[in-house]
Length: 158
Image (cartoon, rainbow, N blue to C red):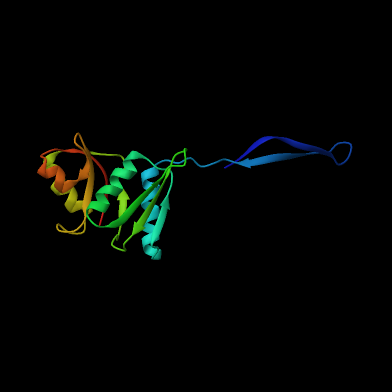
């Protein structure tokens, strides 16, 4: 994925041979999902046994997802750092996360399909949580069932 962006210098070797040296720049990768990057950083830091992890950039969806994890006791305190740019989040880890991830694309989940989706994604019925975005906000699948609403699936953690 190298892209020539212009001639750097011409070097004349002899009368008939002209060597062109190209200035080559690597193309930059673009960020697809900031939530996926954040959850991947958290999962990798848990595996390494770290106590804290820094996630950047920040978004409202990341904050709400982490608040659901915090409510269930999977992570400790959240510290939101406002750097007048995209922001950062410092997450205190407790060592309870086995896996967390994003479901992309965000499939529609009606109320009757929540139980089947939970059994497909989670290791057990009593263990783990799905995170849904609903008309009432971002919540886990048990709260969505209590509020009798469906939505779109964002991710999971256990």
